[in-house]
Image 1 (cartoon, rainbow over the protein chains, first blue to last red):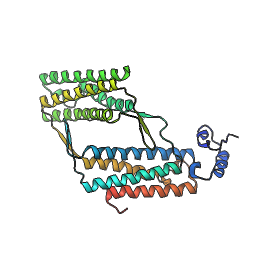
Image 2: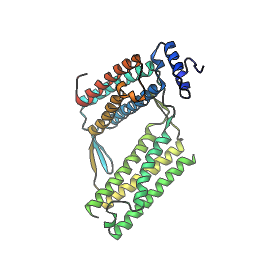
Image 3: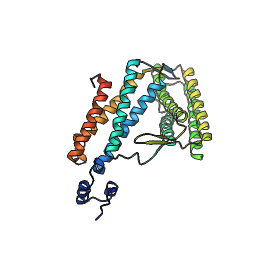
Image 4: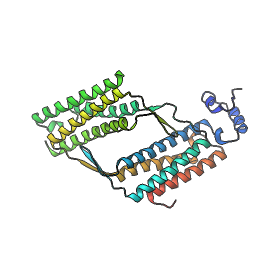
Length: 173
Length: 137
């Protein structure tokens, strides 16, 4: 018998005996006995919702006024009433997720997210785009004059070498 | 430079600028480990590396600024509301997919679990719809 009460769902990953699972279900009185597949699905989806709620909160907090960058700007067109509603309801949603976490014994993400991973994820996307640009893969590139191509290439090569140096810095330490 | 190429070049560089700004935000805002309900973010970049990456990222932004000036690239304007709506849409879709009837492909839940998950997801859905479509809570 493979059953270990209190730790069944983890064992279930490597063991697929319904008799054991049913016995476990009858022995455990709460929803902590939910099948690990459903628990994992719930964790994955609620985690995604939690991340979106956090991103929403960060966006609202960071954009209390219009923000101007180099090639884009973000116009604050969320009125104060809607802003407050979003904050209030987001908190209620987080409370619901907390309750679900407790009721279904949901676990935090198994593989820890890290600043380095987030930075590298964004760096990879920028690098991929720069690599294409360095190889002349810009739509309409063939319509550029010789001078424009030279000027543009000089900047792109510089940007490319800068991004490579960021990779080196991150991997060196 | 023709308007078409200018537009495409602007789009490509804007894409890069957004990623660089996310890197800056991530490094400047996350100085310690952060713990949320179902995930955590480990602060695993040392101060020296962080400062070097920030300097290089800002230097890249300066280069993009020069490209903008030299090729007279245009600035794009976007509304915060649209960005929030995209996130709320994602939340709504994910909650809708979390209803027990949408998880049947992964096996049937016990009646007890099904009722409980249904009750939670309906509440969450009504909250998301309140924000997205102004439906009463």
